[in-house]
Image 1 (cartoon, rainbow, N blue to C red):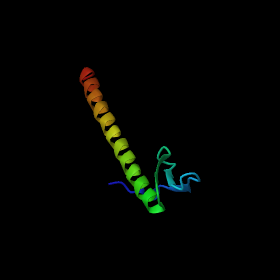
Image 2 (cartoon, rainbow, N blue to C red; image 1 turned 45 degrees about the vertical axis):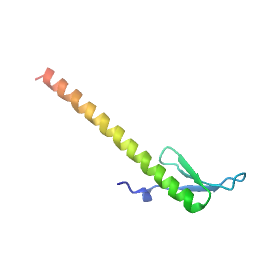
Image 3 (cartoon, rainbow, N blue to C red; image 1 turned 180 degrees about the vertical axis):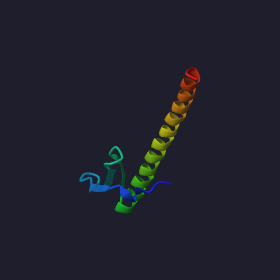
Length: 78
C-alpha cells in the first residue's frame, strides 16, 4: 500500500459552487472535490492511491517487457 503523507495536498474553495477542490501537485496535479473539506480529503486520497497504483502497474508491465527483451538479446549474443 502507498503512503500519501509524503505528498502535499492543496485545498481551495470554488466560489460559485462552494465545493472544496483538493489537488496533489506532485502527482501530475490530480484533483478531486467534495461538498466539505473531509469529503474532498477522502476523495483526493482515493484518487492519489489509484494514480500511484496505476503507475506501479504500468512500471511493472514495462519491466516485464524489458526483461523479455533482454533475454532475447542475451540469447542472440551468447
